[in-house]
Image (tube, rainbow, N blue to C red; front, side, top):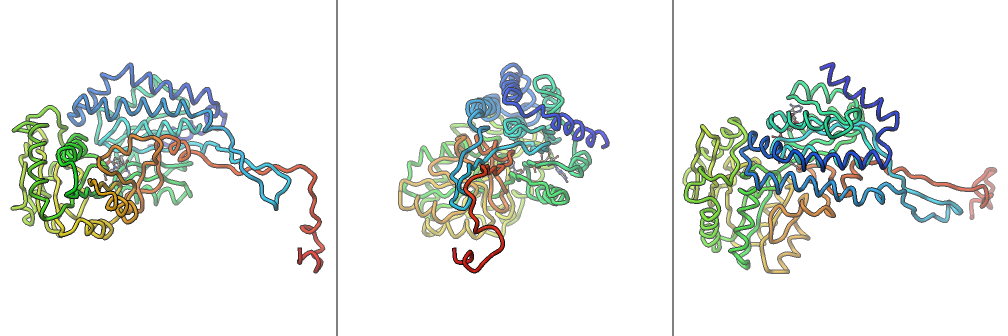
Length: 456
Ligand code: NAD
């Protein structure tokens, strides 16, 4: 444990010496990440397969390629992001110049989760580096192959005196959290998010918490159903078999439209994953037996026994669960109480689609909310009425691929955001700098405060 403490202190020395500040250092690290992703692509794909049986195409599209574009976006914008921003002066300070100067925060801790273990480790690191910080990365022990690959590769491609990887589970993370950091960026569940925030509070350390929640999908009857179900299916089962923070957690549709939607989803699932999805190579497995048992409990709940309308097959030995649809699950079923984070998709029904907004808003705020409709009025009402980390209309999960949009939750789904320039901002302090000359003296501001001065 002393070792973890020592890592933070060693970085503080390099940071204090100013090593991370220059534009050139930042560029070299970002290029190092691109180089690593290109040269070690096979090792990364293999590690993700070992941890999750993640299909190669998914590993490439959702982890390796996104990391490369994230680095390239930062490389393109960095010079401008680092520039002090000139802002207007006020009459009170006239004459003066006013600047907002971004400066690095210092030595930061990044804790990532197991489900996208490569990108969730490196994407925040890109922001930390771009903003000129030193960083310790703590990958998730639940994806051990990717964690040890990151521990091996980062020192090969990045400046080891300023960027370190600490591997480990709860004891090692607890030791890290006892130290003073200048920012903690945590991705994971809200229970640990609370532990992180409490530890950070002891040192008044700011945090970004990238958490989860139950992300709903509203499906209106006025849609292109063929396209809608393909997008829902790929956003759920094609994203790590539902083990994704913004995967659809449940669907809300109207009673009259539900049978059509279920049929279309079934048809699409069979096309994507065949008649025996447990044998499909295009779908990840469940990460470990704890999560397999957790998901099995949701399915074994008596309240949903007669609600499964598709799927439900399980293979405990290989930790596989088939894409599963459940229709009309009651609100007090376990599956409606917690984030599912797996291949089960309940569908609840309402008389009128507009009722969906009230259902979503009666729960804790989700990380994402989705609406499928051709009705522009419904779309506008959705944007106006539903609160979530992010909204997406007529697709699923894709909003995270736009670097011009902030990615993060609200209330229980998280605090703070990142991606693109937002990542740079998350790891920067915006320093206010006002500069005046010696002219422009106004006698009114100086004592003695005569009655005449009060009237000015
Ligand atoms: P996890 O188990 O990998 O934990 C995340 C991190 O917390 C790990 O680094 C782990 O070592 C650490 N940790 C675990 N227990 C701890 C403890 N008691 N004390 C200190 N540190 C501890 O991941 P998880 O929480 O199972 O991840 C799934 C959750 O993360 C879901 O809720 C999901 O929605 C959310 N998530 C959010 C995002 C996002 O970007 N918002 C992305 C992925 C996952």
